[in-house]
Length: 115
Length: 114
Image: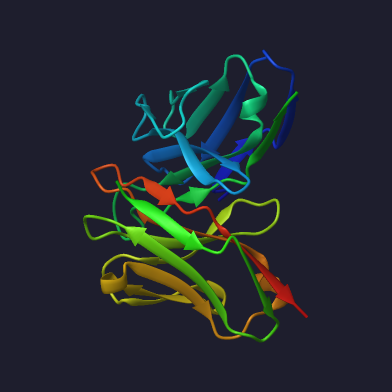
């Protein structure tokens, strides 16, 4: 049981390049989230999904797109990377029901640097 | 809108001393509250959560937190700090509404001196 995994762990991009971050969970969770973490800012929600085929904007969605074609995967895309998107990105998932509802499980993170 | 305030971005204690990390929230509805811990270069791990049952919540690694509605607080404590407790700690509150998204505080970095 791997929990939440993220690919890649590290990436360096040049300004204007594009990339996709992959998040996978094997807990059959309905909800999935993408956050960015910057020093002194805590975690800020980029986009989230409440189920397969659905996505919604979070607090800081500009410059990012997401897709959830399969229940276990949640992809985060940067179409044209900017230095302001240098950050650590975390994926999380949670169940929609039961005692663990609202409890989010986090992946190990992806450290992205845009030069 | 809900918000979370963590007092003190850095807290330093000696090994064996009491750990107290402060969290205050604003919420118009009864919230669910969480404390997460992040060790260097790792993801966030749940320490404990309050979900409207007992107001004193016990978590992993000897941590506990008390929900005080009158003070809108959910402070995290541990009686005796260990070197392995050095990490960053995040308080979070449910956003309200049907989605149940979490709002995170900015974090408190705990240092433990030998």
